[in-house]
Image (cartoon, rainbow, N blue to C red; front, side, top):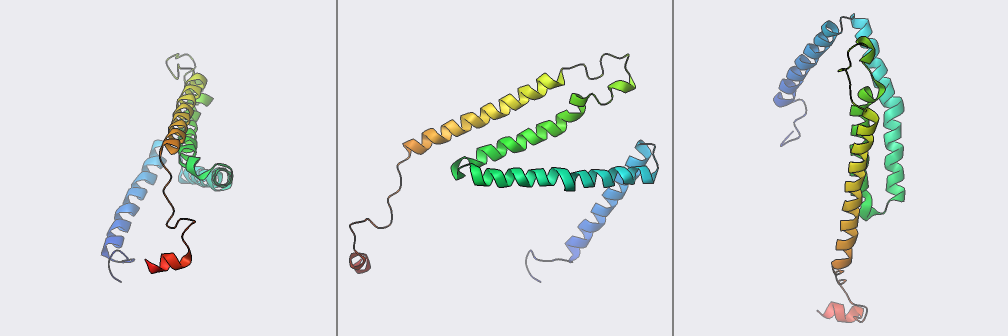
Length: 164
């Protein structure tokens, strides 16, 4: 094989060994840090994988399919960026929003002291305001940019185009 298509080459095996070592280190750290047994960690990893494959991925595919069918092509990129940013915001904000960890130290008011509902809604408002501004700018610039002339004008006959 030549060029960048070296599957099974030295670079692949070096990266594989390094990656496997990093994953082993991470698994070992998770088992020790969680003070759980390997089966407990394995259940969590398998459960997270199933939730991703059976819930999150189908939702992402359905939303992507719907956006591709409903949103005009010129507006898709801003809408897709907004949806990705929304997903990231919800995933990162979920633990605080749900109050995970608060029950471990209920007498400590400094554990998750913020109003996460308001914070998440504010971030989502900023995201979708930016998307709206992006769309408005795109619509305005589309109106200002002159449309390119076609390769042939309607008055040209096929014989006139061939004679050029």
